[in-house]
Image (cartoon, rainbow, N blue to C red; front, side):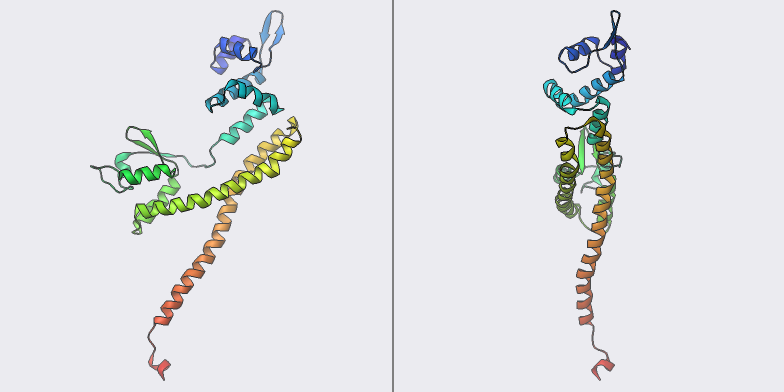
Length: 251
């Protein structure tokens, strides 16, 4: 494709494309006669540059990253997108403040309790989208909170539990990220990031997602069984000790 066709394809201006090329961010086109022709690699490179800029990288940093990638732009782009993709599979729920009031200690007239709302936002449960709109980042977690409220547990106490769980879950997340970096990424980087192994890195990253979830759920189920047996076993033992003696036991 010509530079004008490339500009339309990537929703950029021909001037910006030439500027990226002059900075060494974009490979030169294949020149035939007096016309330069661009291909899939140029499209991938420009898409990657735009996405990295959106993440806050400046052009100099992007240039260093591209020079050190040692792989096709398509491979790096796919890996970068997988890395930045949300870990969760849930679709966030958008909700109005009036509806949110029922869950956060308020009513339709007063709206949500500001203190509880601020705490839920700080914990990452909610995201304020402006005006009277909020994003519930994990509807699954929200449903669990609603069930706790139906059991008579206050929203404030539920957020206490969320804060404690967040601390434990952060440790689990750190453990899996460190595992990937130490055992998968570090050997790849030490080998000079060979081009043919980029698909292997992408596959490892994508397989890590369900593995981390399955491992966390698995160990939680084992420990939950142990803790229920331990604590409620003591409760049942106390209850048994409080039972009045029968006539036969006295005899």
